[in-house]
Length: 115
Image (cartoon, rainbow, N blue to C red):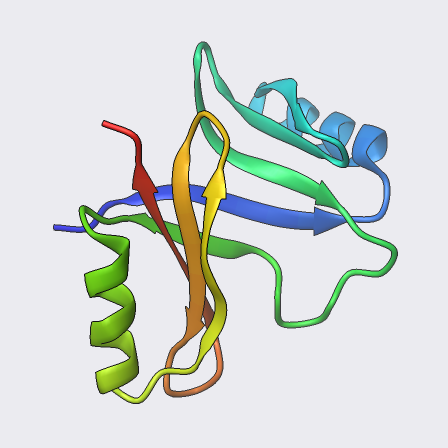
């Protein structure tokens, strides 16, 4: 089973968005990269906020799935009729990530964690 491992929201103001989600869910936040914070409860993060100039309708939030072999997953996606949006790229201290579309154009993210 490929579990959901990360949910990501685009936002135009990181501080404002952190306050919004903290007031509702009591999440804690920590800086991850420039223009991105991750959130969750305690030590484990469940998602992130990414600062963008303008939120793209229909693109946010994005959902990311944990996979054992990102290359094999991308091949399966292509064979199923998907378009790869972003090829496999390294995410420091995390592993590798990539995105592709489903048959209706929804973006799907996959992460292969360093194990």
